[in-house]
Image (cartoon, rainbow, N blue to C red):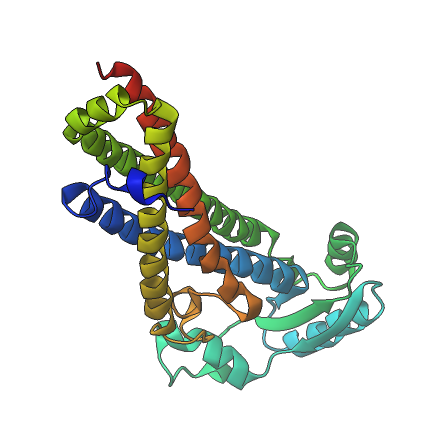
Length: 289
């Protein structure tokens, strides 16, 4: 609640008012993007982990006259393996599509000694990879099982660390906001030292004076953060929609109820401003004569 008499001692305009509004707006804008980064990378890490954990690849390298027989033998082994939901050999067109980014669209797959690939989809329980490798080595000598573990873990780990970096960025952003608001509050208190001295002479307590500064700076930070969040959400909505071809860059944003996440930034900014201004005002008022 406002107090007209107390609010008069806080400059309604000037460098401190503009600094508080602009810093809160800028930091809230950056916080929205850091939050979007954290949410998007978390979603990406979960998707990669789920998709790659449920699929494997069997590669068969054998002479041309044996590759067909070994492929059929491998498919029979996979059909009898508990935990394997389905298995199918990739066609020449599918293998050509996999190699096209590196060798171009006219690669003659049928004339080259390219291994036959078999796509393996797992059930929720999964299969015994070590046991399957042992059976394949005995029945299909040219088969090599790749359960994606070797390169899945670094991808998921990188996405998890990127998500953590986003949350660390949010903490740093609010820390920088607190520092800027503290500087602005100290400057406003120092500029009004004479007014504060007069108020003390007529009986005003430091707690009463501090509340006026805390109230003004908290409302300014709240308003500035609100403007920054609106600008940040608008910028995110202008980004391309999530697409498989675009990968991560087109998936930076929120989905569904996730669009409510940015609107926790203004209340957090108000809380940061409240605490920072309260501490600054209490310390500065003790130092003023």
